[in-house]
Length: 207
Image (cartoon, rainbow, N blue to C red; front, side):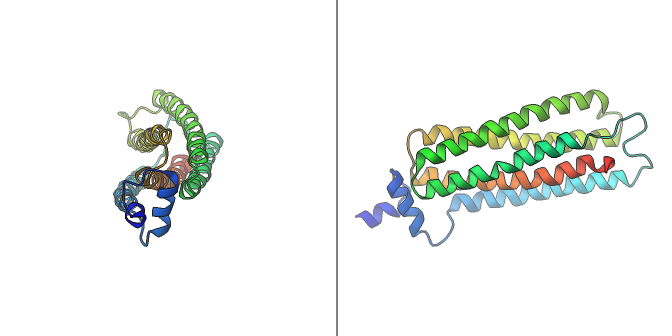
């Protein structure tokens, strides 16, 4: 009877959820589903960054005359802070797999607070940039705003997923929620890697 419960998605306690995880021979389906989604999004960002550099080499001045070059220090610092949230998420997954739901909950909450602060500052910076780099006036402005906007949207989606997970973890850890924790952490690893690619594309004219 116990073996049937620990193989079921209906494992409804931290102990049972941890037991299910220990008995897995492969990664859960939810994890693979997020990985497939990430592959599509990685292609999207790859094409967008390629478009950025294609447009750059089609013009003599990048950014166009009259447009300030992007900041360097602030985007790099903010990106480093965002990337650092991979640590509490990885620790949250570890805690969840050990059945320590409270620790996992606190670690996910910590990541959300940092990521939310990052997103707030970045949106403020983007709105400020739009006043100077008008998307309709140049290819540079168009691709610059689109690339940063797409990245910020992915950060916002990740935060919403974590808030959903935090609400679920308040009611305890189940196998289903543990799979969700692992899948959301994987999504954030991708977002953080893309953040590095985006920020170096963003500051490229100033390097």
